[in-house]
Image 1: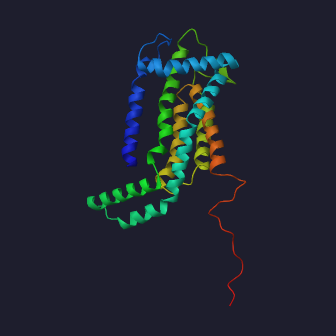
Image 2: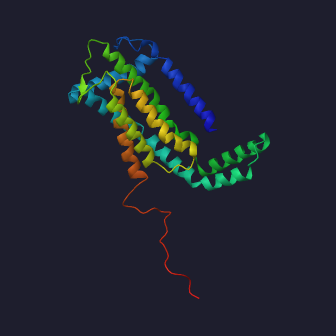
Image 3: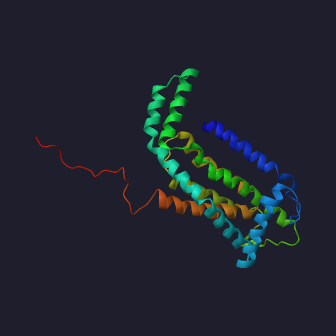
Length: 258
């Protein structure tokens, strides 16, 4: 199931990317035609410019847009968290099913999938919720890349710098910062027993660093701010220092009386 959804996510991302990649080096305006330009790129450009004019720089404008985007998908993020917690709760039952249907023949695996689906439906677990916020953010990230690239070749826009970083050029420092904060996001998130998921803890930050070294610094800035928000959310949801772990039981001292 996860593999199938991963394929769908990859194909959807590819379609979204290819739908606008041919115009990434062309000027952008309200008259630009096409679904991608009218409903993704230009709205991002307009909102970014509005906050840049309001706050005094495009760097602050991108930070404001990032916060707005994260607030907009917050309900989905909450549902993702709830689904993740339910998934953790049913892990023992899933392991029991895996042991029960350990044989790899097609008939046994079909029965395993049927019982697994029944278990998820009865507990209200939706495995797709784990990827939905990322799927929604994908066109926004690609759209932001296109917006920055096209604003950079449009005379009416001057991106300038944020602190010491030119927003239209790659920044190794911001790329590394984005990757490190992404690692903290994964570390402060739910515990991962799956070895494949643990491997993602190392792959995702490296991917972000790699992309950040070749993409405009504005995109790395989006990742940095967005990941900081994710860390705060994770600390509040998963790692509350003022609350004891519910699964923790007080230790008993001494042996049983004889």
